Amino acid sequence: MNIVQLCSAPPPYGGVTIYGHETSKELVRLGHRVFMLPLTKAKKIDPDYQREINYEIVYCDKFFNFATLVDFILFSFRLLRRKDAILHKSLYRLLISRRSLKSVLGNFYLLSFVYWICVRNKIDILMGHHASARGMIALIVGKMLNIPAFVFVHGGAIFFDENTTSREKALTKWVLSKAYGLLFCSNNSISRALELGADRHKIYHVGLGVDASKYRCKEKRTKSNYYTIGFLGNLFPYRGLEELIISSFKIVQKIPNLRIILAGPDPLRYWNRLRALIDKVNLGNFVEYWGEVTQDKHKKFLCQLDVMALLIKGKKTGSLPSCLEAQSVGVPVLTTGSGGVDEYILPGKTGFICGQGVNKICNGLLKIYEYYQKDLWDHNLIKEWALDHSWRKVALNMEKVFKNSKDCSNINVLAKIGKPPRLGNGFHKGI
View 1 (cartoon, rainbow, N blue to C red):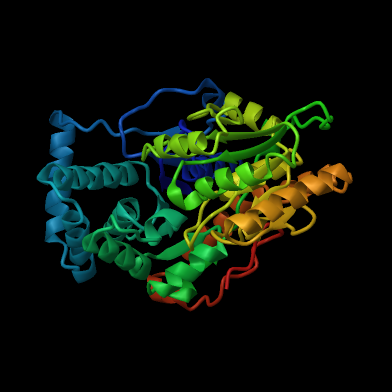
View 2 (view 1 turned 180 degrees about the horizontal axis):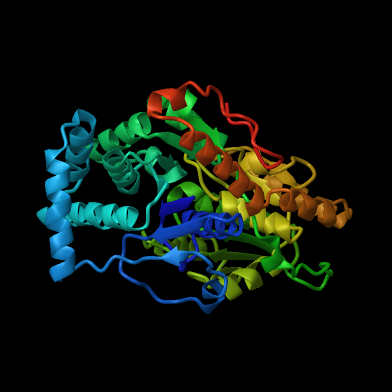
């Protein structure tokens, strides 16, 4: 099959980026041809990722030359002459979700770009990551070309906040209701999608993976080392970082050589707020912020950890890749039980679920430390648990969903497949 993924390409590090990158690699190894369309201009190159790429990345240069202008005009003519109410309503919702004329024209141009990539490469399957603009673009182009258009529903777009406009909410709900099929890696996200009106017959939980070969570095901790608590991911308020800092302040006298390392992009400039809190509780000598990490620095980060703290607040899904990456080097994970992280740990064996709130987080951190003191962590068992979640299994699950869709003549037949099947050893039953 020829497959298009509308997904950001590495770098930088990020859960959705990693998902697109790793599944594309494995789908190619299974014999498929995969195109990744980041829908952006080309970015800086990370040599470590570049050596791994076996799929085709096609960046979108957002300017018109003669060829792209002709494509744009022809695409617009074909789109507007189609007498399809769902198609036209989808286009309308996509265009009005943007606030400026420039953004509206940009989305229209991206539609043309994806359309012609699909036409010229005889694409069989189209998948947009996130139930947002990318998902809507996949839906529209799939409708035009009669291609099964799937949406991979990650945590971001389906969990609204105070900045989400009514038009963006309407777009997300429309994508969830009209997509050919919905792929997930979290039961937490499935529950939210159902709340927003997703059809449970279109839902497939294909699981999450980790490439443990990148992170073979964990050495046995000695008493002279720091005791390091880590966090990896975008610095967002819902990730529980303020609670982590306050909890660490309360237990710093009980854990010798305590150190906290935070790593990941800071799109909201949240680090300034965290820095003020760190200074307020006098933890300046105990906390390091590494910023956005390359793949090499990512490995070095994991190799220094004793516990990964993924303390999600509220319902929003997040930090799932970081959970498995930490466990792949034998590091236990502490989670509040929110955000879907608990789905990827074995409580008491590969980590703990502590619940939300500073006091519960303190108890969880101290319990993990106590297990270290008593030598109760089986690091090999933790690694084996992570290794059972391979990207190969995820790709096989995706392949089976795609092949099932190719046997269906339309979306109504697909809906009759029923509950998500158990797709191989890597499948986690969704609903």
